[in-house]
Image (cartoon, rainbow, N blue to C red):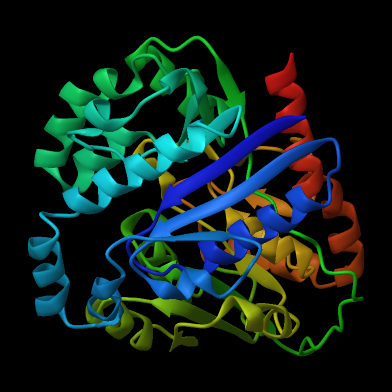
Length: 382
């Protein structure tokens, strides 16, 4: 029996990521002809609440510091852990333990890990899982980490079995940089609820939602708000009688919250637990995905939020190629950089006519976690 472990290091608690990892673990349990186990290493004990995921505590006495919203405590814990270096060392030792009992260990790649190549063993069993272009991402916000990754990335990849990623674009980027031959695609997926969707939409109003764990530059919230401001001050559009609202959920900086509050018909609600999303989504017509991945030089990816939207019967707007879906898939509309809010309203009005359960049913083959895992295992067996 083929045995695969998937392990990742998460310093802070990210509810969306945790839900997806739980779904992955439960989907793995449903497949009988191979073993698929999921592990999360973290100082944050919130990752231990679901027994399907193996929680590996790392310096758990830091947990309260990481839960704090204080910037002072955040930088204090970075100082105490030598900027997370100690966490990474313990994490790599945990990876070594897994390579003793599993045929392959998928490791979510930690960029700029200056000592990983010294601590990782049995690398022929390891597949690094890349969710982004490491160098391109670091270049935008951390020049020191960018230089570390530039000079240690090849050392870290030397001897590994291969690279896994959510898109061919990221695979190609990392292969060219690190001279890796074995490559695999593993998109994000979820377990689709069996319950029929209850449609609570307002028939007289277009309601649009954007959910993120934490709003960052690549989400393109600023571009969306700018398009709304242009729309609301212009008479040159065809939606004078269209009543609409946009609602934003997730952690955001004060300046972002202020920008939302100053934009017409926009409302900020803060963090929401993943368990509450299905009920919340039932009230909306359209979900907004990532609108500025070009800021990370990415044109392809596989977003967790896309799957969550579609599983709840919400069509989605983005501006990149969502891997794992056919090009003519009706419920994802890709916008260009210079999009207008008119385009979003046009699409929302078109989608409002469609039953949410039809959207869920037609999306299921492309977002079902069990099917995604089976496709990956077939790749690795050939």
